[in-house]
Image 1: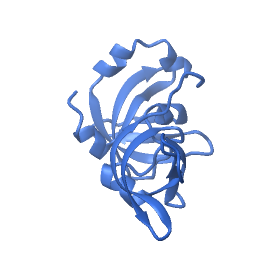
Image 2: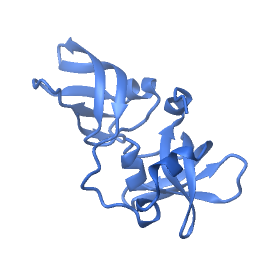
Image 3: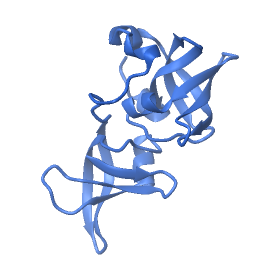
Length: 164
């Protein structure tokens, strides 16, 4: 499980289910998996190696978003049927800007003029912790109370591997 990850510092630590020392997760290893960040509490399957400085991840094999049972739901998506969200097409997009401190930002979907609202809670549910301007994404977009918003967010490379 991800203990913490700071995309600004470029690394974080994972705690193994079996215990033992924390495992260093460098942003380059995460990028090789197709993501530039990962949410605290996300479950990851890793290949690791022992180094002079400790245990570090060499490859991310799988990633699951953190459990959200105690998370505050967004009113715009809390009442939606998950199958309706899953039925929305994945749309290619780029991050316009995202401010983790404010908890939101916007993306531009290719072929659309309007901005798509990105909320921090949707990122967490999708297993991400932060986004950088220009970062490529795939979004499932719904009509929210104040306009279009992302209901699911995927790193571009991760979305390419999806079957749906």
